[in-house]
Image (cartoon, rainbow over all chains, first blue to last red; front, side, top):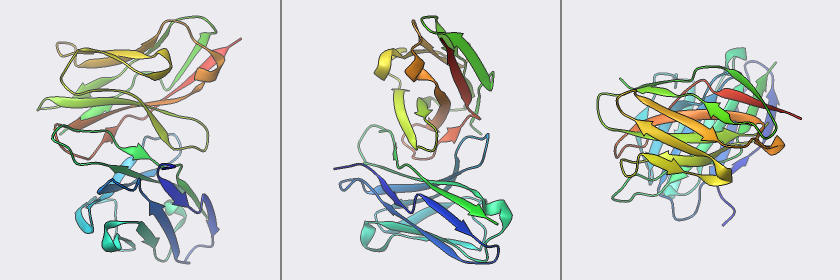
Amino acid sequence: DTGVSQDPRHKITKRGQNVTFRCDPISEHNRLYWYRQTLGQGPEFLTYFQNEAQLEKSRLLSDRFSAERPKGSFSTLEIQRTEQGDSAMYLCASSEIRARHTEAFFGQGTRLTVV
Amino acid sequence: AQSVTQLGSHVSVSEGALVLLRCNYSSSVPPYLFWYVQYPNQGLQLLLKYTSAATLVKGINGFEAEFKKSETSFHLTKPSAHMSDAAEYFCAVSESGTYKYIFGTGTRLKVLA
């Protein structure tokens, strides 16, 4: 397994356009998370899936954002009507469910630039 | 509510010198604590984690951290810095058994030749 994979690595889009990012988690991981990281800040939690169920969404996830994880495998994060404030690195992570807490493994991220 | 404070957004050390990156946490329940490293335009890589076992935790690349409940701290150390340690380091906290990390704002480590 090559780890968490994210596509694309970079995306430049014009304000008002829609964008979609994809995340492929580590194959045996049933938890998947999306984070957003802006310049000079740590990652901020956006949303979380356990299998195909979206169990929590942050207040940061406005109604322009939607995430899906059909069949509990890969996930997509869509941003509609992008704004300049959406420019950030979008990180995906995955983890297993165990009796004891395990760490999340992160992908390399998708850097979004809205012009 | 949980939070993490990383003191010092930038730290510079000479190659071979001690690395000390500070992290203080706030949590009303026993925390799980993590240190991650991020290289430019890359994702985050786990260095080490504290999950209520030993208070001194050893991680990869010679890093270690000590959980001190009385000081609510989880500082990251390495006895001798290497040029390849130059990166951004993030401390994170999560509640026991949960999945959501609260990250600090990060500390950028610069290693001087």
